[in-house]
Image 1 (cartoon, one colour):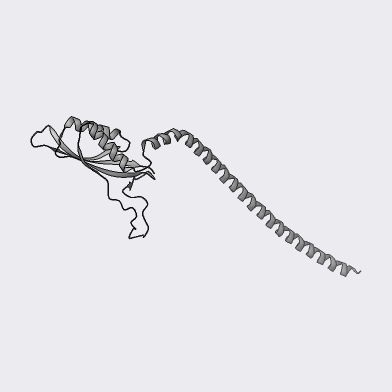
Image 2 (image 1 turned 90 degrees about the horizontal axis):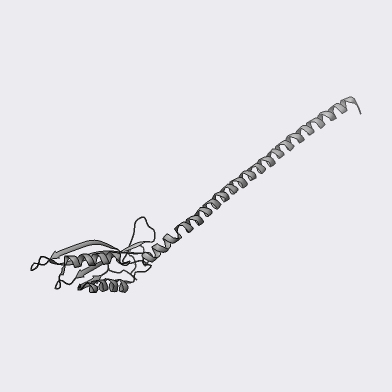
Length: 199
């Protein structure tokens, strides 16, 4: 083999080796980048799992912290809107004080009626959602006293006090008092009560 052929063979070999090194460098760079991306993804997933675990620990702690409060709320706020029981409670309080009621009424029910806008049946009727507290509803109850049997102001205050202590009539939202013309110490009344329901 002549020196000229050897020279050309060495040049070709050098070019092939340089090309091989470049290809190896590019492919190793691609493998390294892929491994780096996988490592970043695993680290991110690990961080997300750590955060979820800390949230879970905090949620479990909150459940334990507010377990008693939740029990109290469930015992105080009725889980149903049993209107018969509500009427029975109101009339029982009135009877115990010698107050005659002419009516105890609730808002009109739309149960079973389709909404004209959506065409869907409404599941919750006669109540309005309480702003800021999910799944808590307010229902209005109107109580009218028999106008033929006026009562004293003190008896009326006792009636209000007992209504506000009853879990089904927690809040008096509106009071209308009408003194009698024959005796200014006696009066008749109309009330609007609010009861809160968490079904």
